[in-house]
Length: 519
Length: 74
Image (cartoon, rainbow over all chains, first blue to last red; front, side, top):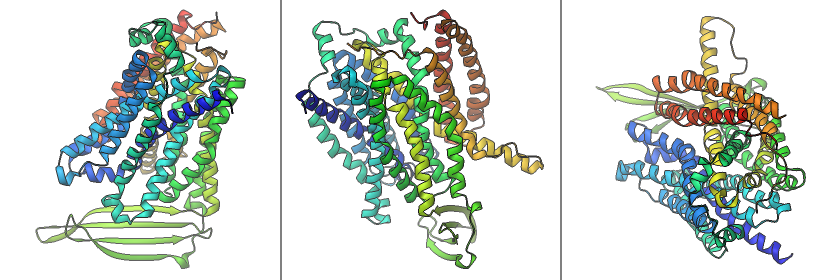
């Protein structure tokens, strides 16, 4: 291994580990959202519940582009290295602190306010991190291998999600369910600080990017990166092209493959949480090397062809893939073993009401080893010496057999492949679009609008479209007319299909696929 | 190809107008006006004040640049 390659590995290591940690930090909040909401955002307090929604939406969507602007500007003014060290510390510090905040029961309203503020800091830091890491690596890499080297940065988002799932699953397995709900959920947040400390030390010893150092030495550092990036038509037109011809489509393909798939399997197919986390983790692990493959391939045949092919494949494959996942798990396609059916009633003390909830558990077994469990909880309340049912909650979870599990893994894997095609080459593509002195600012904004806004809104928009189709079907059923939607559960997919379709047309026509120099 | 790029500029401008109409009338406003909970309200506000300005403003500008020949091959 040559000295140059050794040096590059060090740079990749320092940059990727930091970016990976930032994604890890960002995901654990989402993965633990349910438990966090019970600790900090009690549903019975409407203001706290409102803050919970803000924490979910605002940090993911609204704040990231602001982070891109703020840290992008800083990176173009003072340098890439210092800026992405600041984002790393900010992210790590905020994540660790979330794990330390006392619950709503202990400190009242301060708890949700602090969580929201720290979540906003996480969003800001993430907005600044990616552009810095991608630029830093690209400015070190040789021109003929830029796609390959920057694709290591592209793996971090998926590996970060994978590690967050592993740490959470590991913690859940290591301690009891009660202990996890009590304090164990804080462990994944605390783990972050160790990883951040290691990454900080590695990054601290790195040199500034050679291209930025050269620009600085020649006195060509931009005086106002924001104005030069977005106020100058010659540059701004490329910012728009990057957004509408690349990152917009990439964002929705990425979110569909990694998050919508997860939510679909859990909420629509109702597969058991532990089992669905596991199969997503396996599919991610199988798909991750393809980031590097498509990154390297983009050095040979060009970035545009691979990214556009990924969008096109995704557009046509989504509906068949999701239909296959739905039909694989659907109980309608299975035969029940009636003799194995069980029913149980237990009384569980509810500390809030002081009464015992009635919990009915029904278990259905099927010939292919699938097991469906329905838990119906009747919560009782006492008003003026009368006991009545206050709330009825039905939870269904399906444990699938090994063959169905592998079918789902392959279906998610195909989606991860589309993700790797659009996402693997994109860092090199964005870096090559803009000049060194305003690169950090110019590439960060379209990336975070594409991912944070177009991609980040995907679960909410897709759920809205699917529920609208369900409502229309319910109305039609009541009226006795034909159902307007044959498969309402697939309606949410129109959002990624249309967005990636528009992006494909714009990308194919307007993006110039020629090789570019970043000097 | 340059001619097609310019003609499609009109399509992007029209698409921006269509997005504005559906985004506001069919999507964002009903969520805000008939919010069933916090999620609906925040979602509607984000659609109206974040997603719509980016899509509509961005596409209008992009379409205008395309129509002007800013993306023509040299």
